[in-house]
Image (cartoon, rainbow, N blue to C red):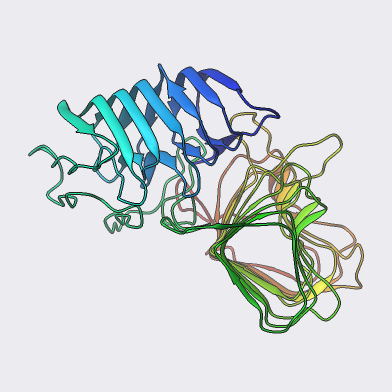
Length: 422
């Protein structure tokens, strides 16, 4: 499901009203008061208050989630409705719940010894739940709940996978099909403890960085560097940049917040991104030579004056693989489709060669796949992709350009699984 990113300058931001879309809160002290949210709320900030509100969510994740490394969230006089037996209510600890009513969720309140919760005058499916700073056992679900009973005290590091289904994914109100990457399988894994860090320059071959909360940017001038299980909040030109002798950079389970200032989240070549969440950046990764983007989630690009936002873009390169990603260019809250899920041209390089775009979910764009007139390309393949309908003009621009191979049978619409024929 597409999110509304609440990332306004300053603290004490007030949010109210009905919102058809999920919310991600990035600013300390945000107050959500009297809101009706048809989606989840993700809290990535300290001292957030949610009160007098109603949250309805039916996806395969959590209705309200406080991410690791953040504390002080207060939820009070609020109702949480789960629309699916696999949806959890309020997770994963480091919160206070007062007079919270949770209905229909697989797990109501989740917390752990390392991420405690205070719960008073609250209920889960009508059953009283109370816990103090010294955590007591969480309640068992009522008999009508799923037979997959949670443990007495669910751990913040554990999540429950949705049951397998033979039914194809469906697009509902901008929601990501459940089989594609999204909030529960990209970014920093639940339960990861992060250590504060400033900007990093990786200058030694084989360096490994893990578990960092980087307030700054990550620059690489060496070979075989690895960045794992970390968060980057960078207001510079690029959150991650490869320069000089950089080669074979691996970025896994990382969250990138471009603070609405990154020209591109990653620039420009010789890297692999895997299970990376990218948001609040003008463009997503630039696809230089020898790049791989897989199983990642790019969403909520940052609209700025005159911006021409693409989830992915290449302006001339070779050996590019884009596989198994959720590329959410469309913002359902503002109705902005932005420019493209992927833009391909030979603007700065002589040609684009050996680019594979497969098994992705792509929704939005003027054209979801933008192919420029200046493209000189070879072996550019589109196959086994799923497309939404929230574009402005069409799915693909100039599909007849030399070098483009569009598999008509396997590129399909998300809602009916019929071929997308350009």
